[in-house]
Every structure is written in C-alpha cells, then in structure tokens.
Amino acid sequence: MGLTPSVWAGKADSDARINGLRVWSGPDHTRAVFDLSAPVEYRLFRLDNPPRVVLDLNNTRLQTRLQVNNNADIRSIRHGRQGKHNLRLVFDLKKNQRARSFLLPPNEKYGHRLVVDLSDVKSTQKVKKSAQTTHDKHRDVVIAVDAGHGGEDPGATGASGTREKHITLAIARQLARAINAEPGMKAILIRDGDYYVGLRKRFEKARKHQADLFVSIHADAFYDPKVHGMSVYVLSQKGASSEAAKWLARSENKSDLIGGVKLDDKDALLARVLLDLSQNAAMEASQKVAKEVLTALSKIEKPHKKHVEKANFAVLKSPDVPSILVETAFISNPQEEKRLKNHRFRQQVATAILDGIRNYFYQAPPPDTWIANRVKASKDQPGRHIVARGETLSGIAQKYRLDVHSLRKANKKKNDHIRSGEVLVIPTG
Image 1 (cartoon, rainbow, N blue to C red):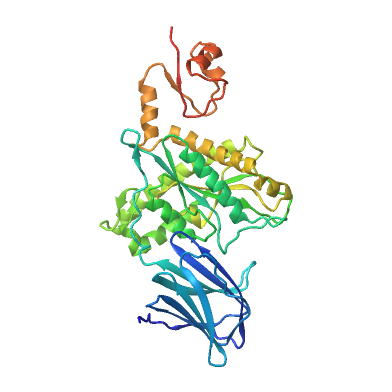
Image 2: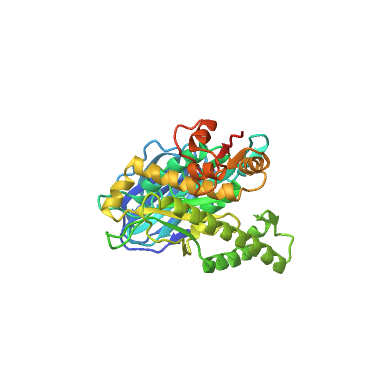
C-alpha cells in the first residue's frame, strides 16, 4: 500500500455540509466539485493497490448522494464517519491517478466549493506536432477553436435557461468541421465536451499544437435584455504588456519557443526585444483577422459595434499566436437566445467566421503552407485569378474583358457565387 503525504488544508467550520456533487471528465482529467455550506478543513491523500483517493473532512456532514455514472476514472465514491464529527470520502479509481484539490469561495452562481482534480500520470507527455505536412509537403494552416466556459463554469444563462457553455461548444464543433473541410486548413478543438479548461491552458494548448490562429467562441450577456449583435475582440495593449512581463518573469517560459526563437540562452534585454517583436506581430495579425471576421459576420446582421474591440481577456494572451474572441450573440436577449439554439443560425455564424479566417490567410498565408503555395502558383501561372475579398464574378469578368457566362463556363460554375482565395481559370482567345 502506497501513501501520498498530505497536509490539512482549508478553514475549519463548526458545522459544514456537503449539499451536492458534480463530476465532469475531459480528455486529460476528471474534476469532482463538492458544494459546501461553508469552508472546511480537509486532508487529501492517495492509496495504492487498489488505487484510491481519500478525502478526510473535519466537522462535515453529507447531505447528498455521491453518485458517479460511467466515469472514465472513478468507479465509485464511498463515505463513512471518522469519529463523531468528521467525514471520510473514498474515490475508488479505475487506474492510478494524480490528485490535487483546492477550495473555491462563493461567486454569483455557486457557494463554497471543494474541487478535486484527477489526472492521468501519463498526461504530461509531450503533445505531438499538429501542423501536419500535407499536399505535396506543404503543411496545413492550424486553427485552434476554443469553446468558451465548460464543466462547472456554465458561462451566461439565457432567459429560458440556455447555457452559454453548450452554445459555444456547438458553434465550435460546427466551425471545426467547416475548417477541416477547407483545403489547406486543420482545426484543433481546445475542448470537445462539457468539461472545464483553465484560461491559460487554453492558449498554451494552442501553442503546443503550433496553431497559426486561436479563435475563442462566446455568447455575450448584458443586464439590458434588448442589447443585441455580434462582436469581435483582440487583446488590449495594456493586457499584452502586463502578460509579457509575467512571461519573462517565469523561468520555465524562457525555454519555450517565442515566435520560433528560444529565450533561455538570451540575456534579459535581448529576450524582451525578441518577445516584443513576436508579440507585436501576433497582435497586428490578430487585428487584421478580427477585422475580416467582423466584416464577414456583418453580412448576417448589424454587429454590436462597427469596429474590432479590445479587452484584457486572459484567453487572448498568447505571446506568439494571433488570437481573437468572437461574441456570437447576446444570450441575455430572448430573441438572440432563440437563434443561438437554432442549428442553421449557428452554422451561418460558423461559416461567416471561416470566411473571415479564409480571407485573412489568403492575403497573408504563413510560409511553407499549402495556402501559401497555392497563392504563389496562381500568381505565377498565367490564365489564373485568385479571388480577393469583396470581388464579384461580374467584376472579374469585366476586368478581363469577358462576359460572365464565359467565365462561369470555364470554371464549371452553376451560379455566380465565389469566395475569397478561390482560384479562377481565365479563358483566353
């Protein structure tokens, strides 16, 4: 039998109660959240053969059922008394797990909580390279798609009870499918289920997968239910500056790749200059792609604001990955809540976001990508035209002194629909 050392944690209370239990599983961890009537003093430790995690809670009573159904890590949770006033909870595990715990204070949605996270011992293995080399040795552009909130963090709630975390996941999945159907693009879902991912871990996961762009999906809320419209955000300069200082202050970050350059062998001044260059490039790219996405979303409806907004969102603080946050609609508006629940509307939103992303990457494709090679080939090859944002088939026909019918026939088109980045054959003679 193995015993993991532990210490007492938390603040003692004379009569605490466990009033509820919620369990979520993600790809790399399981989280159990106990709803408490007050802070508790507790101790967490692990036992082997068979694998178990034990929680001893002082002056605590159980007021709920400890039911866990079809969990990948937990077989069951048992309970028993330890003396007259203390409670013992035992997690029977399916395999050895690392365990950590912490107390959370009340917020606007929940009261006091005790959180237990279980993670696979092997979960720290290095993530495989995700920027796959395809299409004649030219890699795909990688888009990290982040569904906001999740698990015990439901986000905003609509008038009829719709939770933001479910809407954002639905849109993120639809966007990821659309991206994966696009030649030369690949999507990485930051979360693909109802579980929570820490804000910093979200952009760190995007960096590990060598993402070219990070897109976070949200559904806004406001105290006035009449407020409506979509918004696109990038990181404010103030938030970027504070994050840069933190990044360099943390020694473990200095060995990371920042804009493709290692910082661990650089002096402080040079490291800061390199980080500034990388971060400025990422923020400039963020602004450009955000503008393209906002323009595409504006075709669905009038946006909440006509310009790209800036805010100090933690999820946008990657130092070298362009990042945007899309507020798809106001879930606090009953009409928009109804639209967000509609699959067709969510698909419209996902398609518009992809249109904006495509417009940006065909204007500024990353080197060595299939898109960059395609753009170059179309420019080098006579009789080809690459469609720019805002162009129409009739306008392109007029540019080359053609009639629309001939241009449509040469490209085997049934209608006049074209998209940014598309390569058209220009008939000659």
